[in-house]
Image (cartoon, rainbow, N blue to C red; front, side):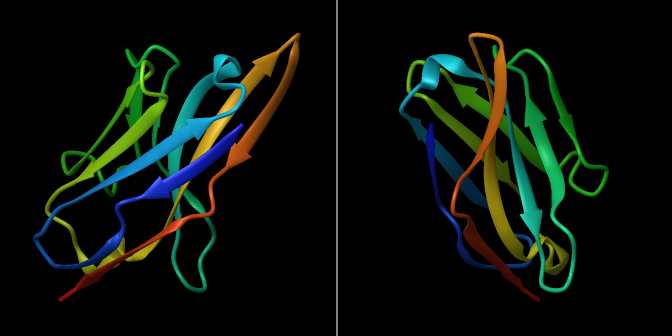
Amino acid sequence: VQLVESGGGLVQAGGSLRLSCAASGSTFSINAMGWYRQAPGKQRELVAAISSGGGSTNYADSVKGRFTISRDNAKNTMYLQMNSLKPEDTAVYYCNAMTMDDGVGDDYWGQGTQVTVSS
């Protein structure tokens, strides 16, 4: 499985961005997916996660009510709509996919996309 993020950039506080994560390869094996972020000097943290069918989601407390995770399995793409962005949202955002194939689980990461929110 290969994951490619896009949609990052520089935005002013209060603005919006939409991140995309396009999956390719053995996409049939993908189960849950998620977005993580890592700010300079900090550990990588979970931002949002979504189940295989998209019916179940969860969010970090810091982004609840501002971010929305979704996925389009027909397009093998996951999204993160980010509204009301704050300077503390500045980080590299990574896409993650958990897979299960023949009883063997694994997880994959994208290369990351930079999000910078100016005050």
